[in-house]
Length: 226
Image 1 (cartoon, rainbow, N blue to C red):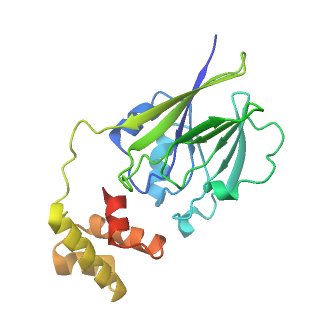
Image 2: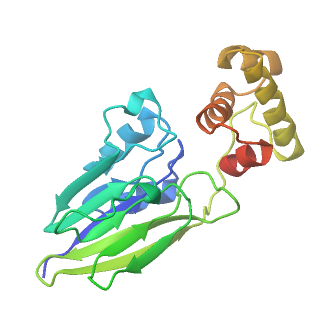
């Protein structure tokens, strides 16, 4: 009996954990529910295999070619994808077997009386609101018309060394506050990093969070960093 594994992820926000890449290596395809935040993430995902993705509210101009909604057929099953659950249509296109969305960073799984799976894999990127980093893997059995849902909670076993100039603890909170003030003063990433002896990639990450999430406060930025 031939079955297929499909990885379902969302809201990576510029972070691809080693555990995620390890799981992707066991799958035939990747479905991404939006908010990658940068083109490098998409390219790294494509190295693992075919990627089907929608554009999230945090994806900038680089993602203009990604659809806001996507309907795709894989291994005999029809998927409908959108980033925000609020943007699901009142009536699904005919023949949809699985609906996938992201945005909330909160994992959800239910099956309708009609047999349609509704899945949010959660976020496998930076932790937000102290939620766990999560993803899903679907095992598809075309012959039996069966979908098995595996919910995965990601826990890093090996700490990743931060680049020099990346603050931690209370210093991290203070650094984020400084970066926000510099952004408001319209200084660019390289200038901010040089002025405060911070890692440029870290500064860029804080800037991206601040600029792609209008109204975000300090706690909101910290939740997306941790």
